[in-house]
Image (cartoon, rainbow, N blue to C red; front, side, top):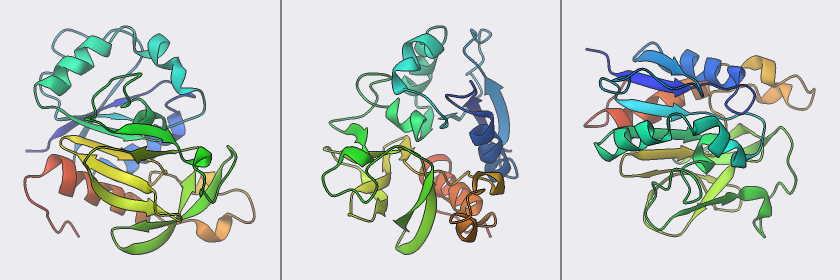
Length: 218
């Protein structure tokens, strides 16, 4: 039986483009439901296995406005063992200022790190080492992670964590869900991943969040 994922959508903060990319990456293996800033029906999370908060454009401080109606339901879901995947904005929202679901780990802006290779907020691609292999990934002011204990899945060019897993929580700073339309700038076009990073995102979800043992999906 397919497991079920709930994805939060509120454009542009958790953008249509990011949500569409996540659906494209994961829907072959998992059932997908969407929810918004409006209050979910009673029991909405009862048969959900994982919640995803994707990325977009905006300030992480929009959390209180966008999640006011559902924050307690999401927290109850997580407390009873539900899984959480945060991508860019959604990764920031795992921090103590927002959902507060990490143990001794902070979510901070990568561009503010002293040795970061990107120093300002704009859409570009960055070099990443993902599970031991070098890639270029779409980046727009994504986070890195400091302190505490977690499994490091990927790193930025300076060695800072780009993707981690801590218990039932997965956090990713770059956009593996990116689609070809995101690569319009001429210098970015050669770095379009042709869907390979969608497969990598699916494998990450299967290996670290929704399957009991690592599985060869492809």
